[in-house]
Length: 237
Ligand code: CA
Image 1 (cartoon, protein in one colour):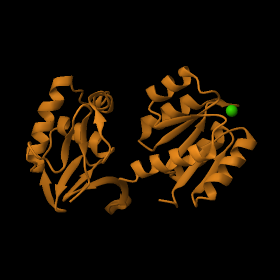
Image 2 (cartoon, helix red, strand yellow):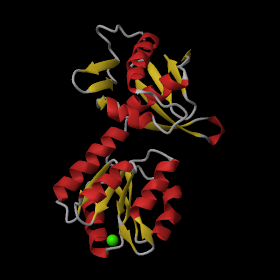
Image 3 (tube, protein in one colour):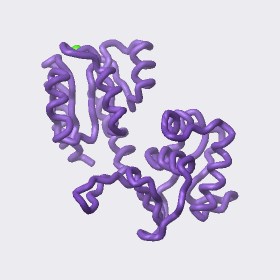
Image 4 (cartoon, protein in one colour):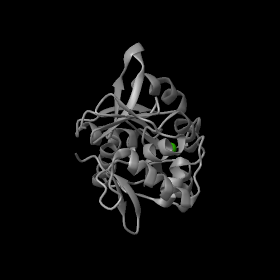
């Protein structure tokens, strides 16, 4: 995904320049904003695949920007923290940053983080439906999960009916396709939505989802148990 669009919010012109050069050399499409106002002016038309946000800005706070972005959607965010402090780390993760990196950063590390995050989010594809509507989908095996329409289809057209709890759990796992989620991460990802599970109910829901996906619980092909960690949804087959 080398032609991914990245929007950098950073008021320091030196760091802005370094990031732009570094990322453009990898064929990313890079846009920059020096203030929150500038950022808000371009982020919607640009539809970036990744945001890189500084924390201290002349007209605002990167964490406030992050919080607003999270209310709107799941586009990945890397926080660029002034110092790699515990407070910044905790705040960033709490507000839903996908990663954070302290300044000064090593170029190699920055590129590795960007690549990883884009690879992860690439599993969620944007498709245009009729009526000019955007829809985000995740494809795994014969299944297509429609994140906005909140439905699951098998072989393109066959509907698989899900309860809202099953949908919440499946979409959390689908957004992290091929990457295991711990039970805590599953709880986090499904909280504050219209449905909030308690610990034990995850196993019950996993069992129901496996039945609906046609998975053999002793040897599941799609929704696998990762011993000692949690669960993973796999894209194979
Ligand atoms: Ca700054």
